[in-house]
Length: 333
Ligand code: SF4
Picture (cartoon, protein in one colour):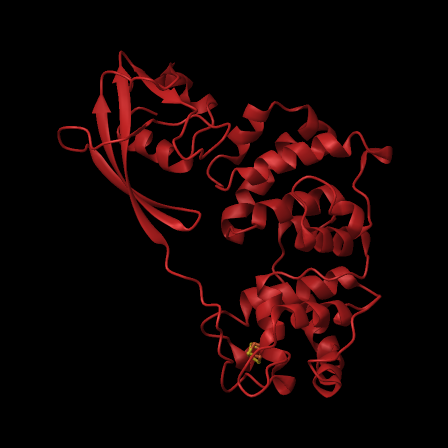
């Protein structure tokens, strides 16, 4: 059952509803021609949605294209080893997504018809699929009138439905998103809202003069206050050891904070090793900004399981992107 327009006010909502054809026309004309938007099958849509979570579209495109060549459908992905899947994902970060996508493929090939279900409630029961992903797959790949409510959509609707300089609560915006989905072309509608958030209704400096919804938007002159501004990432210092000898480097799969499950990586030292670091590197990891100093040693650390890997074999090993960068920079890969 559709939620009622109680706290937002029916007048605002009707105005937004009446402006939607302009949004849809804008999307048809201005959307980016992304590879997963042509022939949106359930598999192609699911892979794109998993890859695009917390990752820039321009970063995703080459990964998506390589992925489709290696794993063109659920069957090939389900049969692949997890280490191959990780190797293909290497550099995209948030490796949990790769694990979930692999588990999802293995679940799908056991389903009747060896395909995802169209019902968002059933989609949500599968590995790695939450509310947003279920809505995106159901609407884009199956044409189901269900919302895909992500950060971009919340921002656009929050600005459109703002009153007295304040955006409504997330729960109210979710209800609005649900009521706005049209029965015809729901996938286009959801993508149009997301695309508007990505290209026009930008977080800091929205491009209101270009917006197809500007005539009905109360925020075009003054943005509503946003109480949920993202906190700055916390800084963390770490010491990385690079055990190397005879053309080999030593890698482990054990991290003190259980990072990068399934990948191989350079060990982390619990204390600052003696001597000068050979290089320093800073990289983001979830909500942290990690500042690493790298020390070369001839021996692996005591008490951590691992193995020596010949430099020439490193290309076949799935490594976290910062560690691949370290090995390349220091001439090991
Ligand atoms: S008019 Fe401006 S603030 Fe309003 S939806 Fe469009 S881009 Fe966003």
